Image (cartoon, rainbow, N blue to C red; front, side, top):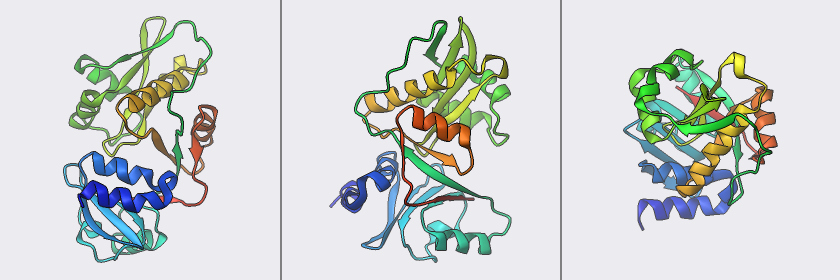
Length: 231
């Protein structure tokens, strides 16, 4: 069996809850470990490890550099204990289950367009994440970030994170409360569906504004488990 076949077989037991693992595999991750009780994948290019279920805590891919995403509290506790200076974020997963993007009411004056390298400084100057750096944003633009336009002016943006989640969403303060965030995310959903990829996102627990946006657009939260980002 190929790596993708192994991952697809493991994911098939809960395609809704673990579909993101197959998406991660298709984005270039390699298989590190797999048994009935759990699975681990690693994207070496971006130094990101994904695990599902229970995995050995001594896996080298868990204990090296980079980021780890896991739905296993034991993994989270192990890494926090071993690396007290690492951050951890608890998140809920929301997945768009439809085959067509959501339909929005007409929003006069609002539109989206692909960002280009000419927009790089705009993103760097306005993205709220202080960890964003030029090469990272350049890669995200190359993959297909979208710019949100208000009456022809660039007013925000959104894109796909390197591991495959929708995000990078930012609307400039003076253009908020007009529905631009909805227009941008619908654009991302449409883009992912055209590419045959899974439209999904990880929402930090307690981010009620994002939770409301995902629900409004028809994304469904997996309420059975918490995801842990550690790094």
